[in-house]
Amino acid sequence: MERGLLWLPLLVVFIWLAITGKKEYEKVEAYKLWAEQFDNAKYDIYSVLGKKGNLITWGKPTPKGIIDLQTFSLQNIAKIDLTIKNKIVNIDSSPDRGEANLQFLLIDNNLINVPFTDVNLAVKWIKYLQNFINI
Image (spheres, one colour):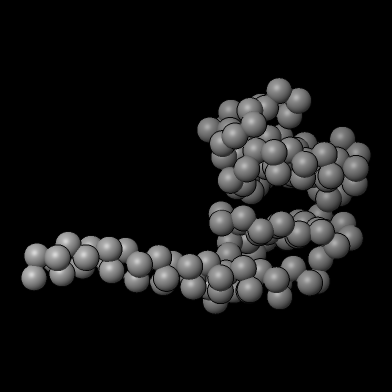
């Protein structure tokens, strides 16, 4: 009986891992369907981002689909910055690890922050988007 009690927490962990894995798989599958409509798209556990023509669309992935979608035009962007812990960072001297945000300052002074779990991916997206805007 003591051995059974020792294995019970391990069983609970395996069940939790299976449920979590299934939810993440459903998020990725929902993203794949959503991303088909874009020229370029990215998936992150925090957000999804897609570019189609002059429009940028971003939202949050869930197992049931993408929620909180926001769309804005590349022509409305006044500035793009990389922020880490709410501080603007130079993309050429950014750290290799950590979480970051793409911060879009729009012409009407609205700020849009798109979270990334990988700084390097955020830097690649800034460089990619800078090819399409006149800043």
